[in-house]
Image (tube, rainbow, N blue to C red; front, side, top):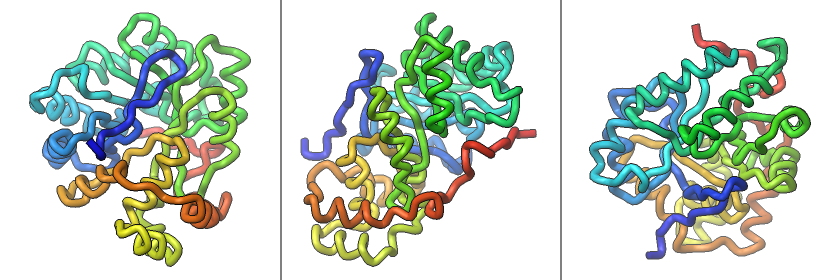
Length: 283
């Protein structure tokens, strides 16, 4: 089928669907229906997190979808308040309990938090290595890690992250981190792929979309996947959920790719917090 989502290889021998469905900022009351709809359309990768507050609803949607557990790739992330090793172990148990799953396909450190916990995210990572050895996390990775953070893991830990989930969109290509990921066989996952909607009215994006007969969102998501990144748009609107899925039956030519890449504003284009400074811990 033209819209079949590619599975791409991880550095640990597993694979991951290149397109996923994100549930960031989706209210728990809306999550079950949104995820169920996404699975009906054909998504097979759901991205949640402890801090999103909707893990239980993601688990319910997967269980009641009629799909076998092995058909759905589920990602979650460690809450910023639980980086100490024993806290991380307890938090992981809570994630499995909320999802009602015995294992999770991918578990990430959500933020490095270098200004907290005495700057020690390595001991946190080593706990994730435990989960992987036990088989309760099939793959492990990080989110929002900068080059310096990744280099420290390389020097002090055993396992190379399978993925690094970072902010990437046409206004913020995050090329330094993407380049490091590529050189070290770490897959980049792009969060905020359409810059919270800001790129959809950009004249360049609109013009490319008109030329290929697609929506601006489809064009931007296609730009991500042609760059080799994993992407997971989110929506609770059925039409938009389906629209975002239909990005594998067309291609952007080199000129279109270059035009969209040329929108990069460097650090000025960042929409979210800087991972070197971010220190939010839920109360």
